[in-house]
Length: 80
Image (cartoon, rainbow, N blue to C red; front, side, top):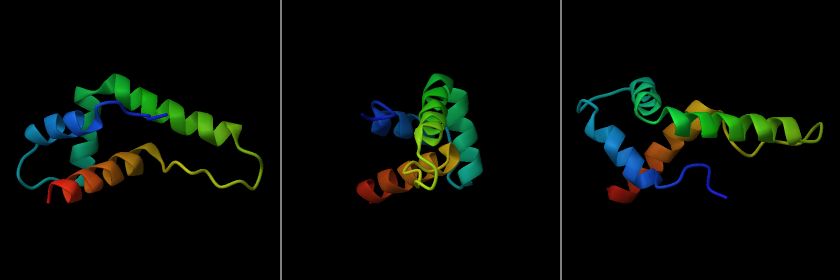
């Protein structure tokens, strides 16, 4: 199950509101501003996964901020 639906569309919309040079932190902040409900879904998925794990099990999903940054990197790479 995808955590974020229509992610390419949403990433493009966030990038459209970013300056040419931006930091990862600025991107995350803009994403949260534009898509606060989706940000909540990402955080909830991370929390649920970390709570459901057995002791000693590795959590597959990165922290929410890292998840967004990785998603952005893959999106940029695919458009490159």
